[in-house]
Image (cartoon, rainbow, N blue to C red; front, side):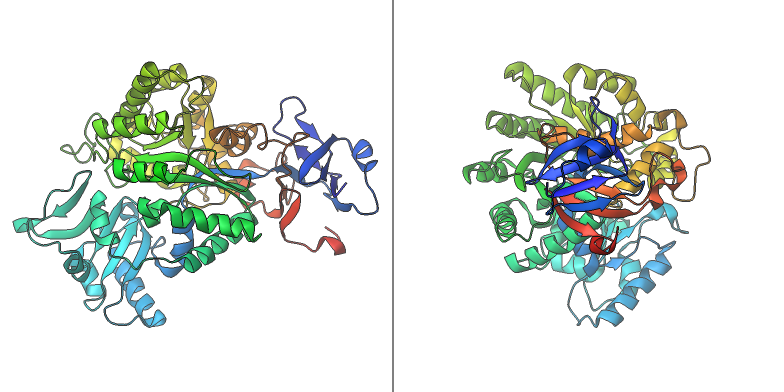
Length: 547
């Protein structure tokens, strides 16, 4: 054996053998799972021994939806997540320009602000950001990544002036006399984002490796990432080749499933013409589903809802992708062996996607397309019934709850708030769930997502008792969605997601017995070791000196 873990609590996520004490690894795969005595009998002089000393061993975590490149790029942006008001946003931008010595005329990027927590209770606008700088184009992204605020210099570069043209699937917000306020919603953001400096292959490699280091240290062994959000669909060959080069050179430390954001027929046809299809690749890097967006976010009040927002009675959200175009894209992907995963948050968007999925399968039956809806934030009773009937996967992000519970009540009202993030209801109906983070929208750390799923609280224990506590998941259910649930998304449940003989040896050692920990403390548990394919990719300790 190459590697043996013993004297611990092994949570296998395998219903045939739910717990064990020891695991043996050989040639990158799990060779044995059982008691200490039977597994230790397999050791040789060449075996690396890891005494778990009562710690927990779990399958490697698998993030079902995130943005790897966007996470890496946050290091180059002003971090506005902690800001409590627009004045603080302005001060942070000015401080960033000064410390980074950004030259006049160069772009300044920021991210993570949330007006829900601002003293002013409004979004930063052009005039606010002009106070931060008139000499630099400034663009700062809301935490949901569906709203961009910019200053006058950025508007000028983008050619956005009085009475701007209508944008399909987006909105340039205007104020008095038709002047743009500097707030851009959904596809209107591309008017500015398309002007950002491009990335070359070497830069992409460094960004990928930087993000991978963070993810491995958090126990992630697989990530399903939409990177074309940061690049655009025509850059897909550059991105695919970059990942493949990193894999061939041995510089890719975790498994990548690439979600392809291709929101137009031209982009999807180009992708297919390049020969890319879902499942193509290796166990380390693989082409994933077509990714589409139909609406925005609840926090930005751009999620598409069937009745207007409680605090904005004329607003039903934004149709980012009209039904007719969604239907064409889904059909083209479906007919060309591409899986489909669609972002839908509001109940009207979710129903639209379910309609299109249903029509597609009725016209072109297939045994297991594994259609997915990402986020599914709002799920009325009828939506739950449709998920069950259509066997669609709900790709959820438990970490949304700590930041969203306040704004959901405010924007949707209490009745619709009760429809929001109803994951226990999904499980009780047998609907398949997968767990992700939407990083950098929320933290990439799976233990923080598991904490949120189990407690439905933020790190400070709010709200007391949990937000709609009847929807709290058990620890076992939460672990499942971040392991086997996510593996099912990529048709890989037979090779990963549980500690089962013959599966890939993707494992995580936690710093303590997670089953014995108080639920409120789950987010504070450390990752002591991450193993990918039998190789120790990360360790907090030097195991030669004792683990």
